[in-house]
Image (cartoon, rainbow, N blue to C red):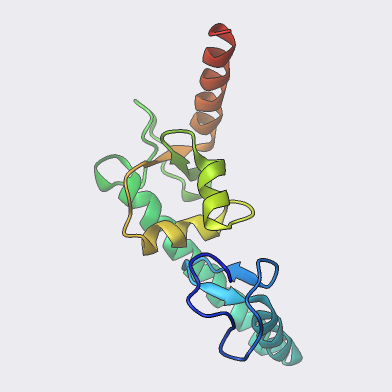
Length: 153
């Protein structure tokens, strides 16, 4: 059974295994087989599939904006780096303050970052340990971390 799930199978009776589960952007655990069946139904009618993709994009964007705004300086959609004025939502991302993003994603069972983490964090009630950074300052923070790591050798 998968960590975080309560039952050994999904509503439709598919067995819950690591390979058959998926964490939705909302943070809910979903069955990959059920998702595939639902997508197949949507794809059968092209108009439905386009509407579904648009709905998913809108939902993911809303979660991203809400999460980044919460972790921005003084509740603003902006980079937390001192004197940085970047407000473009496409250039902002969520940063693990303690540089433990890989461990956190592994613990949650998320294979990569992206829209999934915004839903997980929102569902958890916006816990401490995150901040909003622009792409440039994400890279700068990593460069500073690596530089400090080499200097301590």
